[in-house]
Image (tube, rainbow, N blue to C red):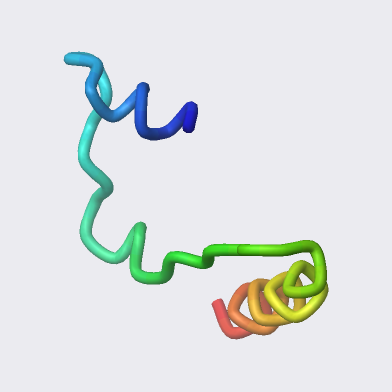
Amino acid sequence: MRQQVASQLADVKEPTEGEADVLFVVKNGEEAESVMKKIIDISKRL
């Protein structure tokens, strides 16, 4: 919600090229662990 509100502010910039390539949505607590593992895997490849 905070990001949705912030995105409407004039001083908020668009992501740079390659900055926002992946979006994860956690719909319930059961998905949190698998999403965190995916994020860790991506960070290890950078």
